[in-house]
Image (cartoon, rainbow, N blue to C red; front, side, top):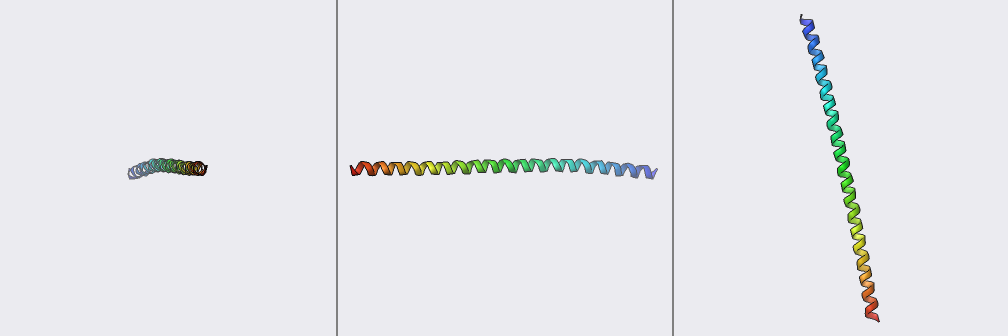
Length: 73
């Protein structure tokens, strides 16, 4: 009688461990996907910032060149 109960208890423990392992794996996947999304958003933000800086520099250079050429003539 005791053997059967112990065997059943071991099986239950194994099933619980397996379920917890699967749950842990799913949580890991969620964390990895979240990190990837954050990295993609950060990269996109950096690219946008660089583009904005380049556009501002180009506009400033054009304005300075136009001012210089109009004041010299």
